[in-house]
Image (cartoon, rainbow, N blue to C red; front, side, top):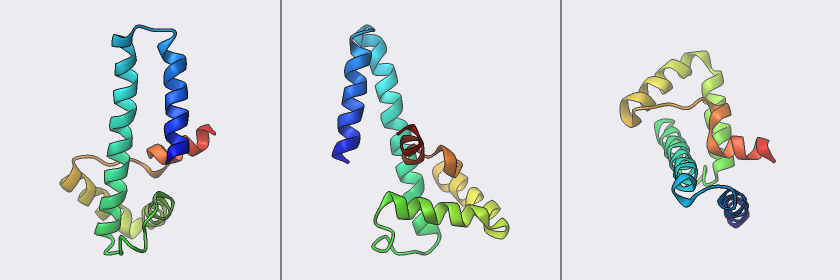
Length: 105
């Protein structure tokens, strides 16, 4: 987690030098909110799958569970419906914040 924070602050430093602070906050707050939405979705997936939060204690494990559930045609539609009903949104596994961060490396 500290490595991610360090990379975000490094990117923020680069942005800060090229734009006004009032513009900068729009980018950073959006990224923070997107991470929050992704994290909440993964927690809800674990709970919806009746899995243990202790067993799926990392985002990597939670993401793997989500990908597995979304690849099952019988489960996918019900899971998306549950996510939309309880959270108000769903995010495809390939667009989760942690997946995008890994692919950006």
